[in-house]
Length: 266
Image (cartoon, rainbow, N blue to C red; front, side, top):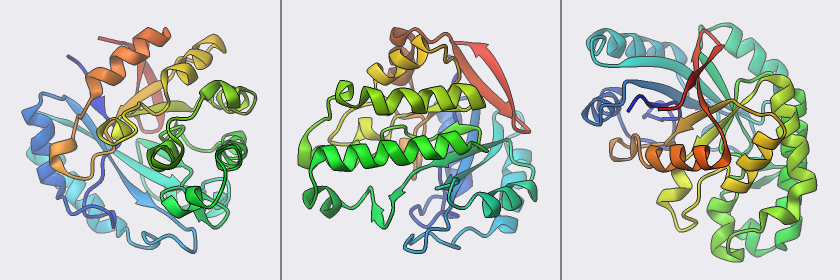
């Protein structure tokens, strides 16, 4: 099955200990023909990964792995930028200095609140936290400047333990403008499988969000395990693909030099 995994991290991100070579070998073992590394690039003042990424050593290792596995694996260069609408000037300067194949845009902070901090959800009502997240995500996608929107409703990974799964329809008026922004800016959706490995057990974005995306004319999606260790490379990509097809999506989006190519789903 011709799949890709475009959302992966190594020890060049502060929340992973995996080597790039280990991740490559895991992809090859699962017969995944194309992957992309997308280390964290975060500038939020409270972010523990701030200033962690050492770009030049990362590029050297990327090129070494490309050479070593050239006959078995296509390796793309990605980057995951946190809050790109807030740090737009810094983001643009950074990505223009390096030949990335794609840029992931992620929302990990709402103001001074981390969406991975369970206390944020314990101390606030569900309607407030979800509404605040989607309002901020609309601002981020309206600004654009990146190629793929990471894990659309990622906050459910943490919030589910406090509230249970959220009712997507309750936030339709906030979600649809985000999807519209993505379509208008040519931003693909990251079909992120990380929450399928967690208590939430859901794809982000979920099936209902994808159905609205298709209804609005959206076509661009990528696959991403959000793996931080070799065992998770390629995790649940088959599930993501099945959900995408159920929503009515027909293509996967591939990137080279920040240029998108839509290919029919296998």
